[in-house]
Image 1: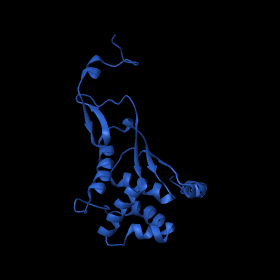
Image 2: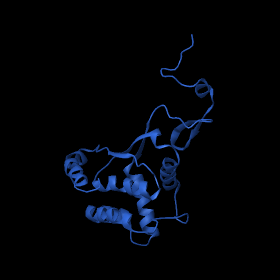
Image 3: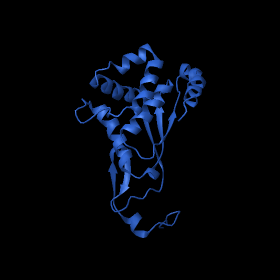
Image 4: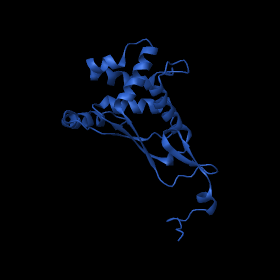
Length: 175
């Protein structure tokens, strides 16, 4: 018994070979048509590693140490960076495999059609800076239609602090 697609799809599309792109995203070898929107999910620590590499590269300190010191300092920096004219990083940024993986994901999001993606989900989110970090990285990687950012507050202490974190995000004019 052969099954037909649930929605009308040109016959050549579902007979083509598919390849696996970075992050497990499939793309037809002849088409750039997405039948399902995919969400991107990454843990907040991975973004912190990227921002720590960037701030150390810019010689302005350690983002990770700011995390331990002051949420306000992180937010201030994340909100002020988009107004500056210089890029945050270039090809000379020192990258571990994990940092390269995160940045490659953002670059892939910039290259593929925006209608392929739904949300950018942050696992283990703790604070507004987790969301602002993704907004900044999307801008820096030239994503034309940024994905909506969905923080997952998974620890009890983070869940307790979530209403204040979300209220802070909604107080930002462009958010």
